[in-house]
Length: 454
Image (cartoon, rainbow, N blue to C red; front, side, top):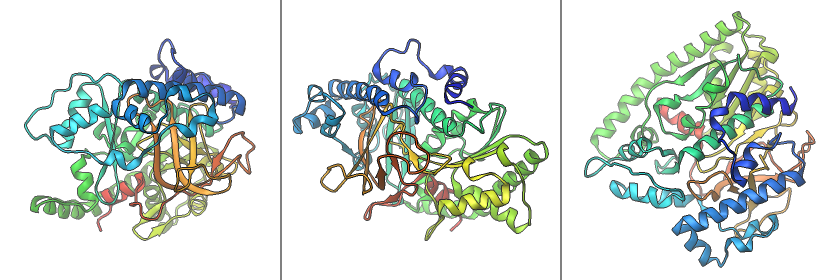
């Protein structure tokens, strides 16, 4: 399928995610380009410059804490005259989003983080939990998503309806554009993450658009997951009751895991028998568990071009074991018959609305350069040279409800172009690691802690 055909088809399918009219530079940078990954640099940079300058001015004018940060750094929107000036835009450390109070003060913290109008939020009770506050914001139209590291400390990000819809369009467009040779809307999907309708954990909510992209979606984890359950699963308990809950969760995990793997294996059998088109999307270690079962039973399949896999969230499968992406692709090909060019990985995080997806040809992470600007920086905050390692940072133009100018705890290596596929624009190498001293974090690690019994 041609790239332009992908956009036309997806714009029809995802019409509810597209504003009418498209009215500002950030929206134009997201919705207008015919491609996210193959646009000539000159055209992409024109979109990106206008979009990010617009977003920077928006946050400068509407977010008090970020405006004060800019003034401390002696920078204003007038100083951003070209893409070369993007390095002047102050970056917020990822740790900032972990520094929050509890109770009603948590609601105030979230409101102060927002750069868009805060709706009336009704908080019940004198000492509401994080989930109580999140539910209250949701009822007011603000989606508060979160993720957690191994310490159990959360990262909370508030998204208004506009930012959430743009992010959903972005992940759908990013994924399908790289899988355009496979994609048909009559495909069946198996989501290797929690049910998006039963949690606000980011790995669940971010994949809600999958229900619009394919005709049928099954989920691996079909139960409610709260901040308390996630924290306890990460091994952080505060009292005797929570310690008992932790034991109960671990006791139930083995049976739930067996049932989950059985459902996945049965689904594979049925889809293969019916010669259906399929996609697995989510944590790679969950699919790897199903592959273990199939390998043990001596079963193999030949989905061929009818099958696709889009993993996300990292590659740790156990506490001390990391599964290389190329080994995983080999297993998928050997057992399911899905070719390597249909087995891709996606790199994203709760703080951003930019989705970097492997190219089918070389499996390098490509940047949606029309609206999302990546910086790879050293310890002093300066950009490293192409080919060098550094800290991943980004400027996200479609994050309207919070300042999406953030430095992370991930270590990456950047190149000025893909060594394999020929698409213009910088790429990241396939493997992403945590910087030494940063806590282990990642969607797959969260899922591993939730469902593993150890």
